[in-house]
Image (cartoon, rainbow, N blue to C red; front, top):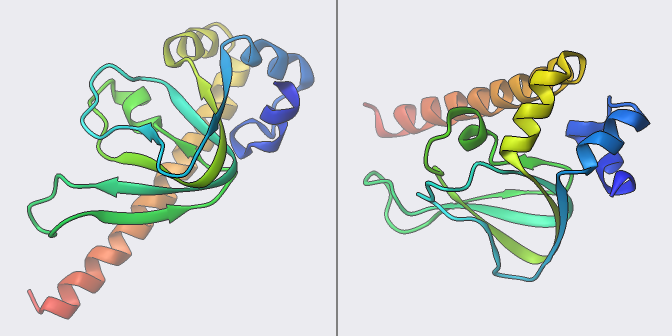
Length: 153
């Protein structure tokens, strides 16, 4: 499991000992095309998912603004489920496998407990998550500006 964690961007700054500790509450998942990694509106899943290899689609059917599915593609080495993990809120989108996917499920509660007990690791992980969320927010901001400009609202 440590070798798989080393490949994922969330864990790249962790030492071998820290990776060993984190690996204790990780599960390696091998998924096929169309399998769902996360389901939109799920209220009971606070785990984090690390995409090791393959690609996924972020899918949402809950918007009244769009018709049908909204799909965004993501490649390997990405993290998913961090919003639900941080907020303990229902999932805001589904993550569907596009082809064969290998992912790591990180037990959200055990991970949060570990980070609380190990603030040096907690800092590195939260810094990574903050940057990831900021980048996604910038992308959303740019998209919103394009939509507003194109619709002349």
